[in-house]
Image 1 (cartoon, rainbow, N blue to C red):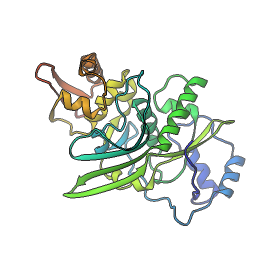
Image 2: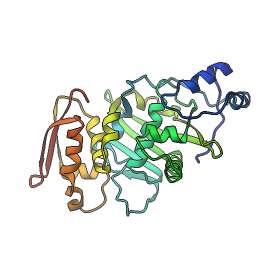
Image 3: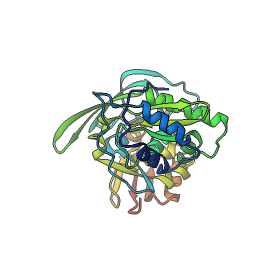
Length: 299
């Protein structure tokens, strides 16, 4: 797991217990005696404080900073490809955002877990620990299996996310800004399978402009390709036609194979997104190297 940093428990024991009970999704949480022990041992670090909460968002979505929907942070990695260990590597992105990544290469499976963690953080302060269980986090991420193999994959994903370090350069309101942050930090009790995690307070500015990710729709998507395209789509306005070169889309999604492999099953992946009512008027023209769609108003 990623390193655990000292953190405060704000308020009384009852407030902490209430926070546990109000988690969006949870299975078995530790009993109150364990919570009391944890509350008595946690303390504020002088240099680390819980800052503003993520702005509350609707229960039916997760959120992703809009700029990150335009990068290959969660690349369309082929299953046979080994994960690379990257060091300040510039990832593929649109020209309006630059992303440097340090850590083990991620993919859309990791995106499922990070977006699920963000959902469970709804209303919590950035930097505040959120407690849940392995089975609850798997369920929240849309995973059907809760067995040992799935828990192992979950913990491996949390480990990758906890070691990930990113630097994002983007432009808002005519001003160029940098954000240097980790994706999350986490810990696990292997006996109880209780998990805690927290998002980086340094991400506060980045989270001021977010894309809504329709959660029921994402969980229904079967292919990684569909999920990657869906995330990109969610970073754009509803009701307006969006047209992009297939070559560019392939690059921004982090596909490292042949273009022919990207185009294979592309129609199927995009139709998955149509079938969950996230886009309409889909038009794929492979000869012209072009794809376009209209994001649904209800997306």
